[in-house]
Length: 212
Ligand code: GTP
Ligand code: MN
Ligand code: MN
Ligand code: MN
Ligand code: MN
Ligand code: MN
Image (cartoon, rainbow, N blue to C red):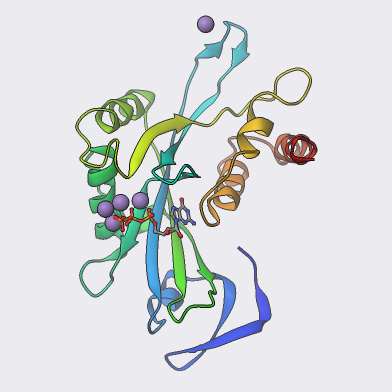
């Protein structure tokens, strides 16, 4: 998500740059579609191979289209609030009841498109207990109505980089992601202190090498 002052279009009472915008600016956009997604995370003492600290559990999902993304979906603000809509999507996709609030909001991003209806992606995050995350995973794989349809399964993001520099976060970041969910992930990992900026940079460098 970026700010490009040269890419402007009209909304109620002004013009809107592509890139980051406030929740209020986003809701003032006439004719924009809105999508809300959330990053659920928890701390963990678990270790991989009884040696490598997992540190944090971060949830993403394998979508029906084979792309990685966050749980959530399209919300029509004329029918429900952004947070109500996100809670509804979480019930459909995770089979888990979670009441999303304004405090969970992280960022809103305007994605200009060639079609007439621009998409604004709203990003939320919620820290949970490891026990709760396990309940989310259980429900998502069993009672969630979208399981096996819109959602092929929840996945945890490996945050470590294994010896040799490829395994773990670098190879995870080399997969294909929906929309701007990859940058939402990268931003959140550093924002919430789940990896250091240096760790992310190292992982991105290795991920870049993998793609060549
Ligand atoms: P339906 O119930 O079939 O309408 O799907 P949905 O409401 O669950 O919508 P979906 O989650 O596919 O999100 C709607 C649109 O938002 C997608 O077509 C993508 O363009 C975009 N999108 C999907 N997932 C993410 C995500 O994790 N992050 C971001 N930024 N955008 C996403
Ligand atoms: Mn094994
Ligand atoms: Mn959905
Ligand atoms: Mn969805
Ligand atoms: Mn939907
Ligand atoms: Mn649906």
